Every structure is written in C-alpha cells, then in structure tokens.
Length: 360
Image (cartoon, rainbow, N blue to C red; front, side):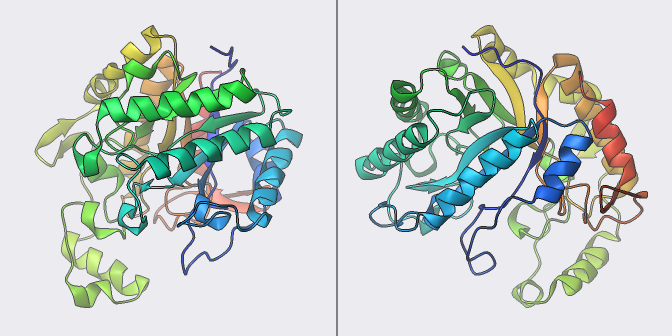
C-alpha cells in the first residue's frame, strides 16, 4: 500500500459531473476556486466524472478527446497548487447511482460493460503513467448500490474491482486506488482492503438531516410533493418546503426518522470502517455536507460533531460542493455569517469549522 502522507481535506468539483440538458459540456478547472482552496490550507480535490462526455454510451468507444484534455488540465492545475486530485468515475458503463436506468447495459451482469470499465481505467492509467501517485489517485466507481439491486452482489463487485485494479497496476503499480463503499458509499468493504489504498465513505448520516429539503424529492425528509409542485420553479419549491415543514428542519442532537442521533451515535455509525483500516487501507470520506435548507444552527452543530469524529480518527474528507447547496460559496443557506476573501463571499462559520477540525 502507498504511503499517502497527511490526510486529504478538500472539496468535490462538478466540472465534468453529469452530461444532461443542464450541463451539455464539461468546463475547464476553476482556477480562482483552486487558488482559494490552496490558500485556505486544503490539499485535496475530488472530480466526479461522467464517461458519456468522452465516450459513446452504446459502444463505449472514445468519441471526443476534448473532455479528456480538460481532465489533463484538472490534473495540471491541481498539481501546480500542491493539491491532490482524485479522479472518480461517477457514471461508468452500465452503472450510476443517479439514473442507472439510462444505461443500455447492467454492469453487474453484462460482460461488455465490465470490459468497458476495465478498458476505461487502463486508458487513464496509460494516460497518466508519468503523474506521481501523490498528485493523482483513481476513485474507481462512485457509490455502489445495495446487495440485491439489479443483480449486484458483493462477490460480483469484488471480482470487477480486482480486475480493474489489476489493469491499473499492470501499467502503474504505485497508482493510489480508491474504492467507494456499498449502500451508496455508507457501508465498508473490508474484503477489498487488500486492494484499496483508500476506501471512501460518506458523511451524510443521517440522510434525513443532511438531505433535508433537497430538490431530488425521493430522499428528501420523507416528504413528497405532487406533480404540480414538481413542475414549478425553484422559488416555488422553496415556498412549498416552507409550507410543508414550517421552515423548521430536524433537531440535532435529536430523533430523526425514529432514531436518536448525537455525536456518540455518529461515532458508532462509523465503527464498521475499523475493519478496513485493520486490513491495511486508509479511510477517507469522499463526500459530506448538508443541503442548504437545513437551518444554519443545526447544520453547524451536526457538522461540528461529524468532523470531530473524523478528526479523532485522522480521516480526511471532501465537502460535496465548494460552490453550491452543500458548499461554502453560494450555498443559499439562510442565516450564515458572510465573509469575503479570495474574491468570494462565503459561509465564514462553516469555513472556520472545516479548518478547525482538520487533524493536521
């Protein structure tokens, strides 16, 4: 296993995250944001990527070199600032946790999709064979499903991951490999601790709190608006949530969806990852944070406890957004302390908390 040095602390950036009508093209690295990340003492950037930007979703052949050249730029811009870049395939041939039905094949049952994922990662290994492991890691597949979903089993998953890792290490034996947990990233995979340099968990527990009021309705606080509300604009959604919840989110510490949550419960929630560390793999929280509609005082109390659990364990982490509803810039959360620095207006209390709770 690689000596990874200090824990990784930073942010996810959605520059090449999802090919759809809202984002038909990927964008270059945001150099202003990277300057701020480095200036504030963070050392890590995670880039979740959608393969459909550069490859056919039917044949998986490369159809556009431009997005791959943008990824080259992400690597170089992060490297120039001393930031580690973790390249994650958020959507792979045959699977994505968001909209798996859009894939023409099923990764867990289809050899063509499995071959394509392996070939894709071997291609990245060859492309970046001269980039040191302290600069770049490969996060193989984002947020695996639960056992039983669309034919997914731990054995099938283990076989695919071991095959991908073999392809990568055949080209670059020292490339740092990151493996996400199952159950949407929340459950550890100790049986793969001998393959992973890092296993990536999630800092969203409980989701009834972290995703309170989120605009993807099916996991949002147990509330479900009707079709007329779904079709309305974002401002109308805000109005609906205020009416449905009274503008009051879940209490923390407190009972959330029938279970009590506090720092002790959070600590217990993450105990399962001990087995991964005992197997020789580091643990990193690849995504974390809480959506903008969670009231600010609750958000800060919860995040303080969550980050303290990670600090004691010397686990790094990455907020899902730098700029956006889970982030410190343009979150849209009401009641935050607005500070200005590095060309941004940002959530000063949240940034202070993120800096304070680093283990370095």
